[in-house]
Image (cartoon, rainbow, N blue to C red; front, side, top):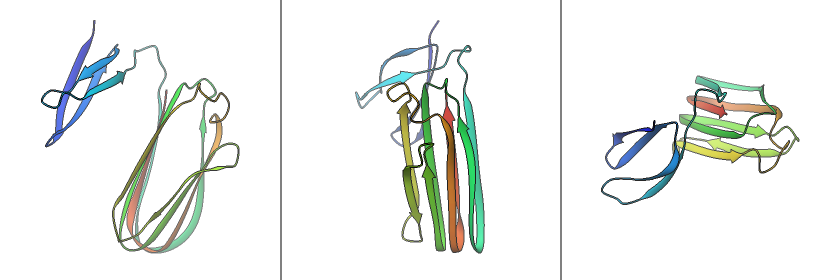
Length: 149
């Protein structure tokens, strides 16, 4: 049985959630076609959410997280904003190469996302990842959301 739920988040933006489906869905009123991959209860999903609010701090820290070898897909969403100062965030893959470096300052709010099919490059993304955070008198915050399934 397939069920599809479409919710309006803001004017013209839809959030689509489907259960037990992998199909093309057409967005009403726009005719835009999107492909939806959903989970069935047998698939494993893992999520990590890190967030922090800074009030003028300058610091350097790092965190590690692991991506399981049996994961098929990965999604990373990183967002942040500052009133003053800077927040630098670097994501380092298990092979030691930088995936992304984000510089968050008061010029604009930042939202970046990336999705991977981990089966396209077996072994490239599984293992220990590193998150490096540097702040310079930052009055702001960041949020990192990582999902694997």
